[in-house]
Length: 281
Image 1 (cartoon, one colour):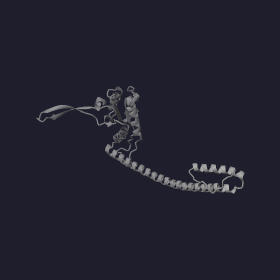
Image 2: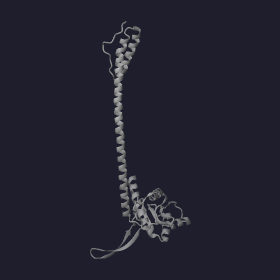
Image 3: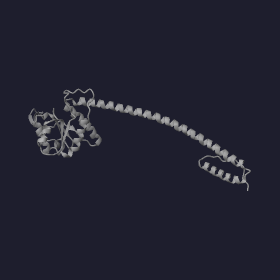
Image 4: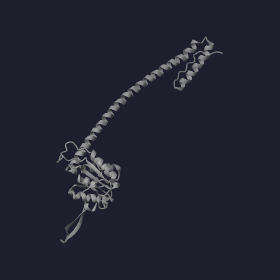
């Protein structure tokens, strides 16, 4: 059994993308019901090679013990000796059909190593029945991680992760992608249902709290009404009770005036009528 399911090869400038791709592959979970042709195969053992060092014995051993090689392609990749040496050695191990091209920057013509591009001579029949030979350039079918925005890049990463894993497991990419989308739709439905349940629960709580708040408001109104009545009775009846005590009336009248002023500031009108006793001097 090989040590690695896939070795991701990239120049130093593409190291962040290589690590993100490796993480995405490791975290991916196959949809339930997926049948793998060879159950001994896996895809989560990923090695990232971005060292830039020469092809030494350790590098050869890593390539020999990797089932697949994913080469991240960008303009710097095309003529990188680091990339070319490892790519050539991987082919020498007899795994030429286990190479995955992943374009991350630039155009294919300026990013793919020459060995990725096949030049084929074909014969063309012209309208006048003349047969001519032309050289056609055939580029590999590559995973594409180029994107203009971060959100689009995340979408591309998710999509290409599924395609790469399908290749590693010997599955049809479209079949695995459909299963992946079906699982995603189920997950979205579950999340929406959960959010709806939380919203309903929150609505119930807020409704309950609203009733409490209204009830407390009514209680507060009753309390304010009661306090007003008490204050009104006090303002009216207290001076009358001490009408025969001129000295006490001085202090009582001052307290009444202060109470009326404070209540007016609170928006409560409890002014006593004109029948209350008037202090004499």
